[in-house]
Length: 384
Image (tube, rainbow, N blue to C red; front, side, top):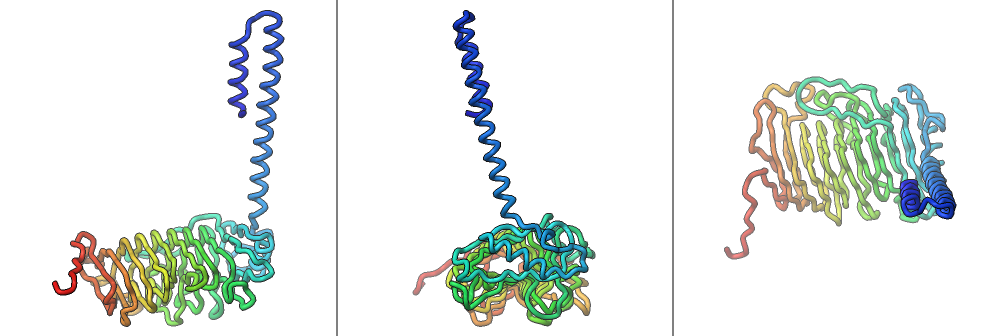
């Protein structure tokens, strides 16, 4: 019985009783019972809510408590590690970053035989980032929101999950990594990657912007072979969920491994926008924006996948110069060994021109590509 139910109870008692002495006595007793019951239930519910809030709070680990400082100067790698150690010791939880610019690396240690169960480890920023991409104007990136930045010239990615031969799962770590509301930055032509989760078992990214600290149109040609995002690798119970993820300015925007499901994805000003590697299980994407990549889609291993809407823009007349000429399109699909098996619905826009029917392939014999609005391909039987 809730407080509302107790009120109803009192109303029913008052209506159903006569106004004699005995009736008044019974009414008084009934009213006291209703009030006591309602109050006890309200107290129980309050205690339950308080208990739930306390339990949720006990799973949150603010990085500031472990010595992190979001001043765009302090190296927070040790503070991040201390926070992650506490999260893993608790059997999982949420690493919480207040708004600020945090220098340093977040290296998730392997969950191995000392903690045999899978855990979920969340890395959550206070504010959703404002991704900057496009082909018109100049939009310098701001230091607003929750930013994790590393300017190292070599080594691990800004955020990575370490593997270990001592893990129960071979080299993979028994961790499900969730990253939300985060701006992850390196620098122009980066020598390190953005997020590397190939050794994690599973991951989910939501509202994440991985970039090189410059407006993507102004990015220099990436020359170090780094990736903005690497998803959990094949043969590790992999599952990747991507929602509202933008990657700009790397050699490869997103390395796609098996069991990947993406929605509202943008890869811009990378040499390879999406790179599909070897996979036993197919991947699926909803809307993918592929803008100013040298190759919008690259296939480097046997992989089945589908893209419901590949919305592409390539630079047109007057939109490139000596520095960003590398962003001119070479191919929409780059699959020279014909390893991809895919269905793609596409729409192509050329800057300063408008919608065009251009769609350029290098290989991709088993990739069915259809311009939105065109008739579906007709498969003929043998001998027809």
